[in-house]
Length: 229
Image: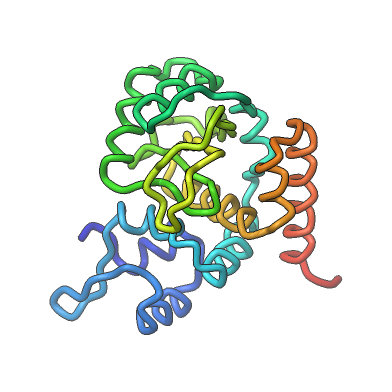
C-alpha cells in the first residue's frame, strides 16, 4: 500500500477530516496495516468510477477550488470524433487512438498498449452507455499536453459494463498527474449523471453544442464554489 492519508489529502485536495470520515464510513477503498490507514494508488484512481453521486458531487466541488483545469478546454485539445469503427474493445481502442489528436512525442503504440493493459485489469465502462478508457498511470509530463477525446461509436459495443448496457460513447483520458486524472474523472462522472447531457451524447449532437453544455456547467460550478459575495 503506497499512500497514506496525507498523500490522499494532497492528491484530492480534500480536508483530512473528510478523508477520515470516508474511511470510517467505508466510502473510500483503504487498508488498515499495523493500525495505520493505507491506500492503493490504482484503487484510488478507479474509485471515482464507482458512480456514487454523493462522492462525485463532493469531489467535484472540492477539486475545482483554485484549480485551472477546464474539461471543455481538454476536450478541444482531444477533439470530438464521430462514427468510430469497431465491434469489440480490441477493435475500438486502436481506432480511437488513430482518430484522436495525440500530444507531440507520445507514441500511439505505447498509448494503445497502456489502454489495453488498463481495460484487461477492469472495464472502464461506467454504465449508461459510457466508457472512460485511460492508462493506469499518467503518460504525459506536461500539463499543457493533457486532453480528453470524445468518440462516438459507429455501433454500440459490449465493454462488460455492470449495468449490462452496451457502450456508445468513449471519453478517452490522457493526463499528466494522478490529481488531474481524478479531477477530470470526477467531472465526467458528474456530467454523466445529468439526463440532458446523456441525451446530447445519445443523439450525437454537434461538437459545439457539447462544448457549450460543458462550459455552462463549469461556469455554474465555479459560481457555486465561489459562493455569495
